[in-house]
Length: 183
Image 1 (cartoon, rainbow, N blue to C red):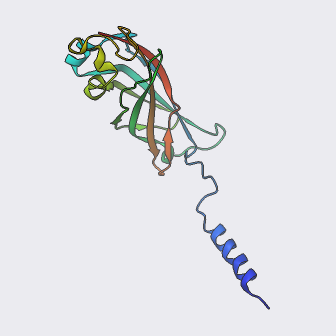
Image 2 (cartoon, rainbow, N blue to C red):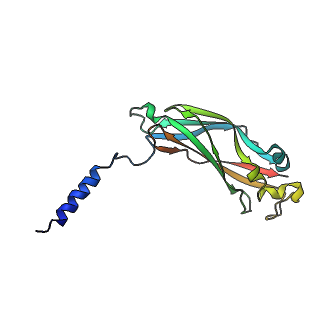
Image 3 (cartoon, one colour):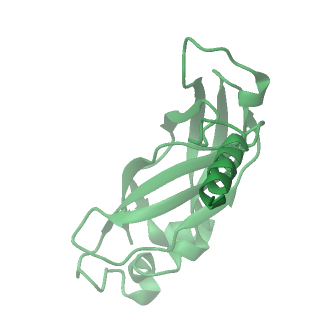
């Protein structure tokens, strides 16, 4: 009698039974969202921005909601915020993009609560002094060399990342806003 099929069946049942949890979504039952932001100018002068060294958003609020409103909550669903990223896409005819920005942040967003951050940087010298934004600096001619225009319109896309206290990774959906950069 061949015992291999029986051994494989027991092995698969053993491995299936070893799985720690049935919910493998990795969200810890929590949804993070950006509920509000303000203090972002619609138009920015790159030469002044270079002197300042950065561009920041005045205030941004992250909300935490339990995924199942009829379920129970626990302090293990609180989210330790870890970082945020800003990526870019063009809102004009150009194709060149500044490098992404990734910054560390701290704070705990309680389940069904919120966390507010002030003056988060969304551009640093790394982005300002990289093409295409560096083309708008007076020293470089003051116009986008790719499009020939004296402005660059960028979509800034932000996402926030954290972990529930139970260790599950959580992130916000991307939010986007458009800024026009001029010399």
